[in-house]
Picture (cartoon, rainbow, N blue to C red):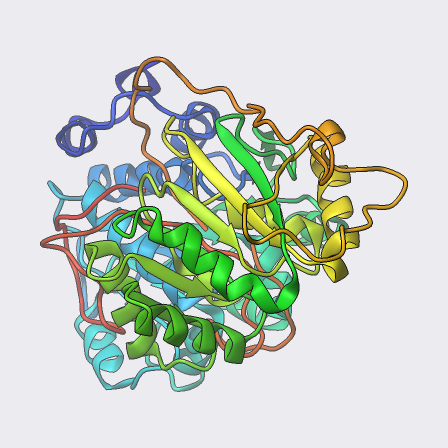
Length: 466
């Protein structure tokens, strides 16, 4: 199937072709025709499935083919809500890339930055608004935005917005939108009861589609575990990274302080490294992420919370320095590699006190792990895996010959228009600080586009699709 067969307009097809995208992903195949018909959608799609294009292309086609005469101040016609500022920026950049041949004024508003520029751009008027719930509520309360003209509403990663405690904010926002003649597209990794209830309350007979069961991982990702004594993890990580210091690697830590210490250690050891977590300012996070995308740093150390906005095309490797406390987060972490048909590698450094966590991950994935000691870093006390070993004959003391569990394609797969980024937490603010969700989406480097920096109006522009 091609993008042409989905009924997309020539101005969108041209932008996609210039960015090298040829074949729609499964979620795009299912969602785009229904959305073009004006149907409400309840779509199950995880990070990396191409969901931004799945809702973004029909949205842009509606705006581009149904121009509206402006009588008075221009009001937003389409609203995309996202859980974090990083994801908002990523989505906005992607939509700008798709709308390269359209004149659609747009803005991206989120917390953590001043409101002055956002006031200015909203006063000038936009057709498309990408926003985080908390900051949008701020503007609603200050009467600096009028949502009465919204024709299309998108809730991106709705499950994580609810996990973060944004349900009251979402309901306040929905109360400001017109109920008649409004199309609603809700994208979520899960269809939990709270999501279904939200859909029943604010959607009109939504069409439900599901393309990827929760907690599935790409077959082209290999999973390797290195047992190690906890105090020697840093040395082992440095040893692994030094094998190819030019290879971009995303390293996950469990705590903000731990990520900072680890990044400092690696940087002093000659590995160009940056850290990203909730205690970093918005500017620091964007700077670190930009340096990573541009290749100025080769290792990015991140917490689950802050990594939500990370989206790098063809990221080759993810390393779990600390295993996640929740098994599902392993899926979210490694989902940042092995995209667009490329192979990916997920490496976990596992100490004795993490054996139970590894068993939970293996049980969730229903996969064996390639477990092998690294010469010189064997744990002093063999790790006790319990009754069910996660890696069969590859356990310490057994046959540690490498095994391949991932299929590696022999030919390059056609490129898809992918989008990323799953997190949890309490709280009611935008971004990667307190209450931000787990997870993130690697994103390719952008040139000539950039983000709004907190609210500068954008029309069509350059950028990589996601």
